[in-house]
Image (cartoon, rainbow, N blue to C red; front, side, top):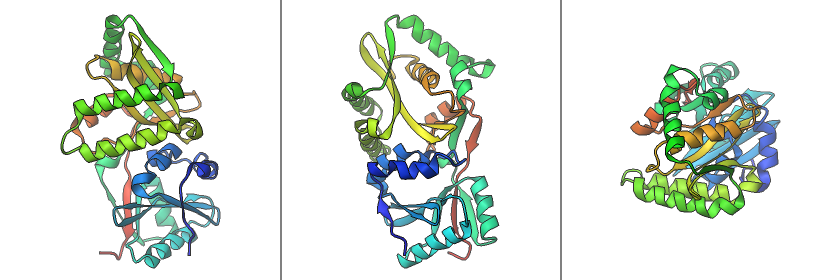
Length: 300
């Protein structure tokens, strides 16, 4: 029987000892996401035979992440399959990218079936491309930034710090009131809770963030957290839509302040939201990381 425990801030060091050194670029593996969304998913972890095992809950549905570690993957998979059975729940892994699926087939051939939902695919960019915005395809982004600079002489970028948290939360509330729809209300309220948990614990989480001011007032903010030693995840980005170019500006300035060790920037999923998908595609991702649902082949 696996002894799973709830994820807390105190678990950051042990969890990142597994996640930071692995090659996976999935946004859900940043510790900031694991912690700040645990209120909703009841995220738990255990360390078994040099593998980090994690499980969470979509309502009454039990879901596992792909085991993270080195060693006997077949044994680790059997452990969580038995765990699901002990809870009388169907076995299911979410977020398995193609290479993970190959690992699953090598460890336990013909045991699993796979399916992809496009809305959960991560958008992965080269950090250098978001910094330089070179090339014809990114010309519209340079235009947005140039118009922002032309129209806002008195702008300033600051690194997110605890003394700016209150103003960031106020901007999010204003953004929410102007953008929420009935269909997205629950999702955006959940995002607000995750955001508040994250930035109120920014120092413990080692969040890196940026804040854009115009005439002394916060116009945009963003923050993120590493997925691994070469991939940085942008967890949140909010801007005043009435300020033309604010999104493009905070995106570019933050990319410039992300340490150069991070080759890739993960800007997460589009959740099938048309405007969000269009915006993410417009930045010319280096890859769209498909993530699979994995179930036992003999399950219904």
